[in-house]
Length: 282
Image 1: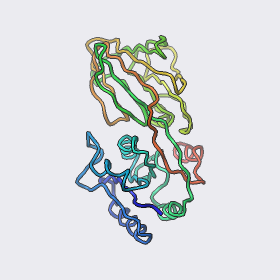
Image 2 (image 1 turned 90 degrees about the vertical axis):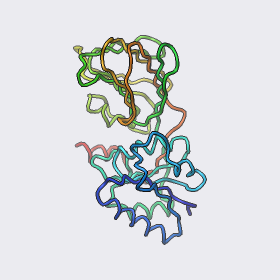
Image 3 (image 1 turned 180 degrees about the vertical axis):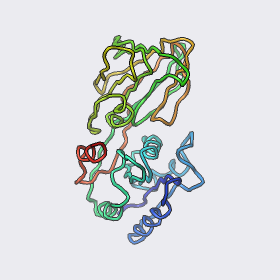
Image 4 (image 1 turned 120 degrees about the vertical axis):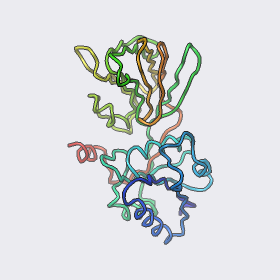
């Protein structure tokens, strides 16, 4: 049995307190302690891990995330280097990242305590920004890295390289570099392909390119994607998982590659990505 379970709720979700009480009641039967991120710590707005999460590797065996995809993404980044697996319970809308819907909560928790599940790994992205040739910032993300123009900017130009070999100079609204997990996010809306999240590849998808063609490029998991800002006097932003980011300058160099860490996820035997794809999008 588990020594403990961490719980990351999105406290802003409707009925979240009821769901928490159900989880408490279930695990009390098995004498499994829960460590719940308190309501005073709004996880989605933190710039660094909360104290509870820093201590979790010694206290819990897995983490339950309650919310939508945004909550899952933030938790995944906070937990990436802990090695703790995540079970996502969807309280949002599309909920591609969560393993189960809230109406299947009790059945799924029973499978959990009966060890009727397996662990999967999801590739993450490591991003480094170089400014004037020097390290400026770095971070990890699960879904994607987006370089895009501001609301009042005109078309921007982004020179893109694969392993230092020039690939394309994209004029348009920006570019998305996505992991397989992120293929069902913004990349999909921009016309990118859907990829099974168990794969290890990178997707490069232009956003509204001012070209006569619009095609995503799929590259190897060991490739390094480099994007150089080639536009002057424009508002250009880097965004990670749609939650973290900052403004970019002319000639900033953004390098994206597979991260050394992964997101571990709990998967139940009956789960099927292609059925989920049909149910959510078709």
